[in-house]
Figure 1 (cartoon, rainbow, N blue to C red):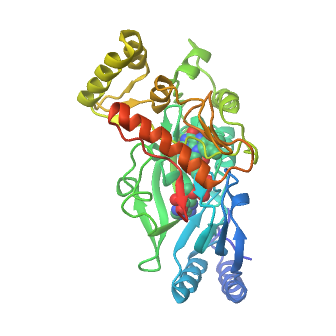
Figure 2 (figure 1 turned 45 degrees about the horizontal axis):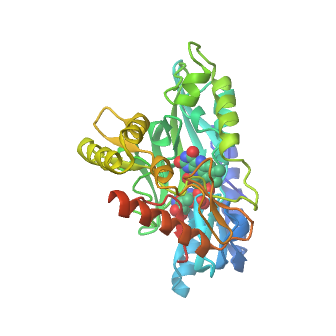
Figure 3 (figure 1 turned 120 degrees about the vertical axis):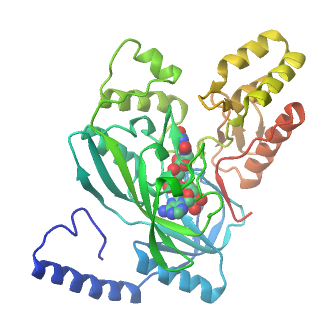
Length: 386
Ligand SMILES: Cc1cc2nc3c(=O)[nH]c(=O)nc-3n(C[C@H](O)[C@H](O)[C@H](O)COP(=O)(O)OP(=O)(O)OC[C@H]3O[C@@H](n4cnc5c(N)ncnc54)[C@H](O)[C@@H]3O)c2cc1C
């Protein structure tokens, strides 16, 4: 089967090009005849939560032609569609999904342009994200090293603008090549079209469900640009200029203590279940006032130290700190439990938690915070089939 692989388009020899196109058309035709739509496919094993029922139909796509066929298949049966990567930001309902799940499996990493200072890299959505980070760190390309050891596929990093330890994917994404289900065409969206913000983009916002992301173009730097703003990293490398590999190693060590990876069925999870709360300065002062009134000056000072204030006046309030104040760190319902050392994470502690256990637990946390502070906590994973 043909995929758009590393260097496939390289070479100017006409005969080679003709052979390539000829083989591609023949293999595409063959593959189309054989495109496999499986029925009643269990989704739990395809997610890191290891929870949820089956998909009515399931298929894999590698390119625009597969995508067209998958959408035709769904249209003919009037089925909703869900695009799946590595299933690490997903909670599937216990009854499953009465539609077509499309898993994106294209491969390839290609250097498009390179100068003394920068590299423009094209990476296929189906590439494993952490393998890509490792590849870039090994080549001395800066910009995504703090995003080491995050599970999932490369395509999905644009969806929620994946972020960790002071870096966000949106800061280095030059553009995104997508299949537009409305027109059946491939479009290139520039960074500014993608609407990147904290855990947000058009792909999980106003254009949710419209595009399949097939390739992401990353602009990475060859000049050292260590981001050590987070406390864990600042303490570890105080007064040093760590190398790219040292930073990646440190992130892996720190994260391994917080989020074991790969994720096993027992203690399965989707990373942070709750988003941090984003406020403006005035709202953050109101919150601090409420904390002081209810928990005293010491609690208010402690929370104030944990606020992350950015240059544009936006204040990120750690939801975990509010959960701690309200004594929500040790809650559990059925097989689902808040991870006490990492309260943003809900774990499938027993390996047999249900999606209802997880959601009931989440509702309890969200309800308590809303009642106490009049703040709405959003959940981070995507919900499917609810
Ligand atoms: C242990 C652990 C730690 C984590 N740490 C972090 C962290 O530090 N920071 C962070 O931001 N996230 C973190 N996550 C969440 C998750 O890993 C990321 O959001 C990741 O990018 C999801 O990738 P995925 O391929 O698994 O996406 P999936 O879970 O399969 O899908 C997520 C969403 O993206 C959509 N999607 C996926 N692929 C495509 C595509 N090709 N085209 C269009 N839409 C697509 C899906 O429809 C869905 O809406 C963590 C998760 C776990 C389990």
